[in-house]
Amino acid sequence: MSTTNLINSNLHNSNKGMLICKDCGRVICNISDNLDCYKISYICRCGSMGSAEVNSVKLNIADSPSAVLKGNHIICPCCNLSLLALMPENYINIAFRIKCKCGHTFNKFKNYSDINKRLSEYNL
Ligand SMILES: [Zn+2]
Ligand SMILES: [Zn+2]
View 1: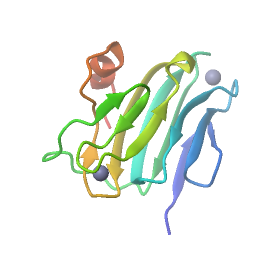
View 2 (view 1 turned 90 degrees about the vertical axis):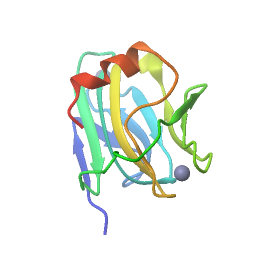
View 3 (view 1 turned 45 degrees about the vertical axis):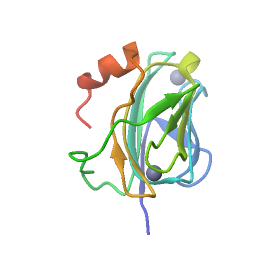
View 4 (view 1 turned 135 degrees about the vertical axis):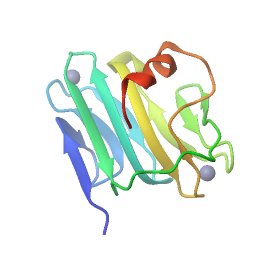
């Protein structure tokens, strides 16, 4: 019952798995089964922009804490599940709004980085 909306991207599975830039084949991130719904936008290293969206409800982030970045994994601080595995060598920038299956929604992560700083450029 979920619908996947892909722009300039391929997904390894129907709505989970590796998110791939259609223009150059780079893997941008790996989308975990632990996500209920999400919107992810990126600028690939090749210069193309793309996005993937599943269950396109406008996710409420008002009461949610920041996710945690451990290595290249975005972790839910409430249930400690891994939500996204990032491939930072393959993109210039990435932004996301993701909902963990425990119910919490995140659009940022704690560890400071240029990626985090540039999230405000996106209207997710
Ligand atoms: Zn690319
Ligand atoms: Zn969670």
